[in-house]
Length: 300
Ligand SMILES: [Zn+2]
Ligand SMILES: [Zn+2]
Image (tube, rainbow, N blue to C red):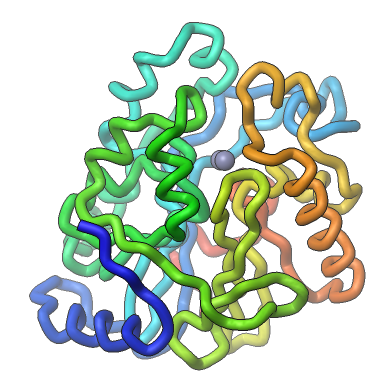
């Protein structure tokens, strides 16, 4: 079933979800975040993950979910890899398996359960985009609404391996259309102020994937974060405004629109120059991930 979500109706829906919750975790009394590492890449030269990267520096890109707790709702932004990822990934061609190989699989659903959460404690899921390494989680939460813009859903429906694993898309329970109806925010739009308090702002970052959704988070501590999905795999790419190497694009068809993604990357690069206090968080940068509280620790 696909429902449409935007603006005011969203708060109402989440409110109803909270009322109906029988889960174990109490509603959060403030905004806090925690990064759940679900796997890491088996390793690749940095030169393969960002143009101009170092040839002899090995990178182990992280696959992670971000748990966001807010008094009006608890959700996962991205989900990393899940319990069914091994099976779906095994059907990839060998060179794709080799290129995208991963290790230390530890699905978010298992880590949450160990920490005392139930599936019902997660009100909804917002993947930054629908590539395989971001939607391993929804099949593990078959009753949980998964919110994505229509163009992202359309792209995934027609998507191909290795970027899209259609088994994962089909196994997710409750796809819900996410409509970003707000004005441009800090140069990125359209946007959606998720709970209407200016602390969680979704913005369109189409390019790497159609309908990719970035997330600005303003913590009460004053820390200001911008999660940019896969616009770049590394902070180095943002700092130097360098895209992924053409070879990777050729081997795995990584970007839906490489030119559009480069334009988004350049805007993020300029924003980070203009606002050095803003922490830019590429979804896969393992070094940047070390600056975030790691589940079950939280940062607020
Ligand atoms: Zn991606
Ligand atoms: Zn990715």
